[in-house]
Each structure stands twice: as C-alpha cells, then as structure tokens.
Length: 420
Image (cartoon, rainbow, N blue to C red; front, side):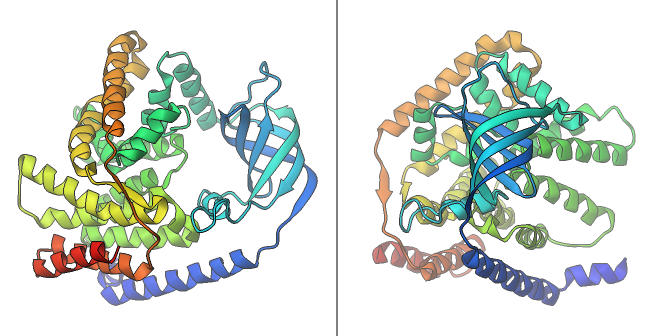
C-alpha cells in the first residue's frame, strides 16, 4: 500500500500517464480515419439501452455486436418498447457521416463519444424478449411514473439527465444565455444528493456504513442517468476522495481529477469531443483551483461563477463559435434557482405528485426568465481560431486563478480578444 501511495504521489508517474494517454488517443484517431464506410441490409438482434421520440421518429440506442443508433418511423403507437427489451431489427446499417456541416460538426465523432459505432435506418422492428433485469425494471418503473406526471419534461431533465423532452425554444434559449450546464446533471447536483443522503443516514452510528450506502446510491443513480460523463466523473471523484482519505494517499483533489481524465480517455478517447466531458473536467479543474481563494459567502460564489464562465468560453467558441457576454450574470441568477430550488423539488414532486401545481408555477417562472433573457441579444460571434489560442488562454487563466503575475493574465486575455 505504501508503494502504491508513492506511485500515485509521483508527478513523474502522472507525466508518463499523460504521455501514454496522448499516444493511445492518437492511435485510435488514426484507426478512426482509416475506418471504411459500410452500407448494407441486415437483420440484427438488439438490446435496448435508451429510447426516445424525436420529429416523428423512434430513436433507439442499443447493443447488437456493437452499439448502434436506430432510426424508425414509428407507425404502431400501441407497441411500447422499454429499456432492456430485446428486439429484432431489419434495415440498412451504415457508418455515420463524418461532417454534416463543414468545419462545424462531425456527426461520427459525436456518436463515437457516446460509444455508438453505427447507425441503422430500420424498416421493421419485431419484439423478441421482455426485459428481466432488475435495474432496467426499476428505471422503467421510474419512466412510467414520470410519464404519469403532467410536467414530465423538466423531471426527465433534472432527474434522469434527459433533455430530449424539453421544448425546442427553451433548449435554444438555455443555450443562447449560456446556462446549458445547469440543465445537465453534474458534480453540483451530485454534491447536493450526497449531502442529502448523508443527512438522511445520520441516524446510523457507523460513518463508514453511511459512506458505503451513499456510494451505492450514487453508482445506481449514475446508471439511471445513462452513465453521462459529468455524472460518472462526479461519482468516481467522490469514491476516489473517500479512498484517498481512507488509505491516506495524501493526493490533492486536482491530482485525483487529472487521474480521472486519463482513466476516461483510456476508456473512450472520443470523450475529447463530448461537450459534457469537456465542461465537467475543465470547469471542475479551475473550480478546484479556486479553493485556494480564501473568500466566503457571496463573493466566493461570484468568483466561482466568474471562473466557470471564463473556463467555458473556449469550449463554447470551439463548438458554437459564440458566447453570451452576460452569461456570468445569468449564471448568478439561474444556478442558485436551479440547484437550490428546482433540482431538489424535482425529486420531491417525483415522490409526491400532488405537489405538481407548485412545481408548475416554479417551472413557469423559470421559462419566463429564460425567454426574457434570451430575447436580449448579447451573443458575440467569433471565427474559427487555431488551437494555440485556446492553449494560451487556459495558461493565462491558470495563472489568474493561482494569483500568479495577474498582469500576464490581462495581457493574454486582451491579446486573445484583440486577435479575434
């Protein structure tokens, strides 16, 4: 155990780990570009992992020999497929397109970041076997309960992390004002859940048992949310922090986060193209650096919001080529409203649907605020920039957060915008 502790504490080990990750990712990207396009008629047996409807189509993510996404014009409204069910699918299996818009969006990389290898345009789907696994049965029961509640779109978003049911104008408004991360279940939400669970279990005199039960719940909740990178990161970060304290590894939280980055990219190199992965790790990294800033109360919240805003700018620019200059102010308003009021109340309404009326009022107020803010056009559009600019930006932000030579930060920051 002492030898393991010394290895984990070694900066040289972390450096070699990063070099290994870079080489591993480059190798997979090389194979990706060498992948041949296929298009053929097939009949596959598929186990359903995710299912939703969009624009008159039934979209199914499932596992055959590899994970595929199925598009099916939904004709038989009486047939209801559930998670874990096994179906027989007939249709055209093909490799996803590389780019739908030049220099903007690579659909194949997007699907790879979600572990999806192929897409299939189904002409026929037949039911084969009903799900019999207990964890899928629990999630299916939760989905049935959510469907029975009137305002199910926000319950899907804040309970299961599924934003597919949100209204299109709300999703566009949320993206426009720069608070998309508030609608994705993340470390902030998991922190609230873990605190709530620990308080509920406070009557148990054994602290280790409380922590173990909390970890079991967080692991199962990660499954319920579809193992999204942000939730998985938060859960593993919690577990590794507990192990760090238990075994006295004396690792900083920043180093634990860096180990998790390597672990995620070894598991799936294409996470580097996943917005949830980028937001979760990059923003968390800079927020962990903020713990060195000894401020309390509102000023600390302001600093955290400001740093989160600055850390997310390159991600927004590289993905959408724009960001909202008032995003920091919107975050100060919407983050507390969502995390402290709407998110916990979502769980309450799920358990006690009779309080749906109050929930509708709160959600209506949220929608009203989003529509008002999104009507104020303060988005700034940028051209595509070389990666060296993003590196320079993050180096300067790192120095700023660490309060080392702030003049360098201001110089780089203004140089960044002057170049644009």
